[in-house]
Every structure is written in structure tokens, then in C-alpha cells.
Image 1 (tube, rainbow, N blue to C red):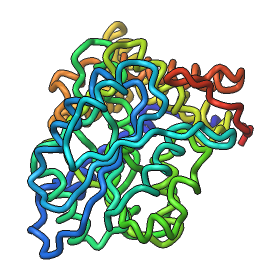
Image 2 (tube, rainbow, N blue to C red):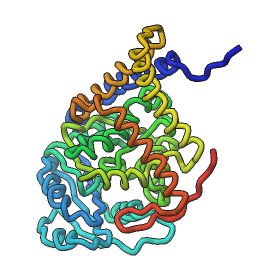
Image 3 (cartoon, rainbow, N blue to C red):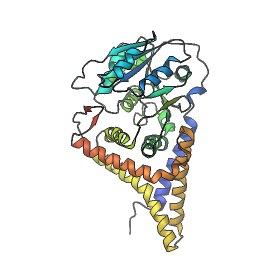
Image 4 (cartoon, rainbow, N blue to C red):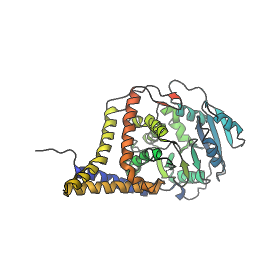
Length: 383
């Protein structure tokens, strides 16, 4: 008896499950602005680690200074910048902004976690909002975030923001992580099972913590060696019994993560292997599977068209392609990506696979660096 592990039908079923996850996530991922105004107005500390951000920090701070929330502070840590960031920060004169200089990086810390840890120690707020220097906020963002956190009684809220993708290189790199979350992370399961830490994620550009709970879990010190510290923190929150929620902030927060293809490649390279906790076989399996479910249907349809063989496999493959296009269109519609992105999805997946393999190779050869810092050798595993 012939045993078939993968065929057009099985791939179609998997993609249908992805579609169901995407639709349920679209319904469950509420707008950050959809909650009623809270009676409490706790003090919010907006915490920004900054390293060589001369191009973006001014716009970020200007947007934060225009917030309509009446009880917040802004703390900026200059993490040993080597460009004009220091001059720009010192030229800003506003009582709401507090500037601190970052201390030297300890050997056993990753740079961003160390910067965020220092920021948290200087914060006076009851709530801690960690964000990045390339992020721009609408004036009502903090108000909406506080309303959401209080209404849901969450210990950590995070959000998917609007990613600006201006160049072609950005369009074929930046959308993939959002697509992966949108179609693979089932929020239904994540919300029904509070301690299911694998079913969680976070966006380091927007993480609003209840300070008491942040300190209870030891905050960034608990994830001091994690490259993807935002996801590690989300998992830690859930594993420690905290309440985690993710929202749609695409109408409130915008960011341009990278300005070109090369920067995007390098930025995601440092993360993609780390997401799998440096497990080689698991990482290779996932990237291989992504390639299979993307190109098996496409090759099958073209093969059927050439041979004029329109059997059930042709229908299964065609349905898989249509559903995948629908998921990419839904993603674009909800999170402000270009609506034609579904036409590029085979290229987007190909580039993601390349970055994933590149991440494995460069990590194992200890060649990962970011913003002038070499990422220290990590412990990897086969499984």
C-alpha cells in the first residue's frame, strides 16, 4: 500500500485551517480605539531605547508630545549612539521628556533588553509603554491604550501597527511576520487557555505593561539574553499567569521598520532563527513546509494547464491558491499593506525562506550583528 504524506488535498486542508485562523483573528483582534474611556487615568511612562536613530527620533518624540492623555512622561535612553542622535536629543527642550545616558552593556545582556531594563528603573508611571524610535503615534494613542488595558484587565497589551513599505524590497520582506502571526497564531486558543505560552506574541514597538506585574516577572532582566525579547516577554507573561491581549493599532500607530531591502534582510536575519529557540531541525522543517504549501499548488496548477489534465488535484491546488490570495488580501485590508500584495506572495515567501536559512547559517557561524554590535554566540539545539 502506497503511503502519501503530502498531496494536494492535505495541503488544501492545511490552508483552509490557516484561513479559518485568519478570519477568527480578524474578528477577535479588536481595534485599540474601540474601548470606552476609562475612569482611571494612571500615569504612563513612555520608554524609548535609542541607538543611532538620527533619522527618526524627532518625528517619534513630536508625535508623543502631542498626546491628548494628561498623565504621562517620556523617558529616552541614548544607548551609546555614534551618529547625531545625541545632538538631536539635547536640542529638545520639553519638561515632559527625560533624557538618560545608557550604561555600558554587560557581557551577559542583549543590548535592547539592557536599555529597556535601565528605562524601567527610571520610570515613575503605574503603566510602562515600551516603544521604538521609528514609531509615530496619533494623538489619542495613549488614551486608547489605557482604555484597552483597563477594560480587558490585562497585564500586557501589544498591537499590530501600520507598517510603511515604500520600496519594493520592503514590500517583499516586512509583511511576512505579520502574515505568520495572522494566519498561524490562533487567538481563540490563546485567549481560552491563559497559560498557553506558545500561543502568544508581542510587538516591541508597542508593549504596555502594568508595572507591578512587569516587576513581578522581573521584566527585561528575565529575558536579558533573548534576541526577540518582545515575544519572550509575552510568553513569560502567560506562563506566569498574566493576562495578555493583542490589538489592531493600524489606525493609530505607524512605523517604517526598514528603508531598503538590505536593512530588512539584516534585521530579520537576527530574529528568524531565534524565534524557533535556535532549534535547527524545527526551523528547517517550518521553512520547508512554508515552501511546500506555497509552491506545490502553483506547480500543480501550471502542470495541469500544460497537460490539460483538470482532475481533482487541479481543483485542490486552485482552491489553495485562491484561499492564500484571499488571506493576503485580508491581511492588507486590515493592516494597511498595499492591496495588490497577494500578487507577490510567492516572492514574499521565497525571501522569507532565504532569510530563515541565512539566519541559521550566520547564527551558527557567530556572524550575527545589529547596529554595530555583534550578537554573542548562542546555544543551539537539533530539536
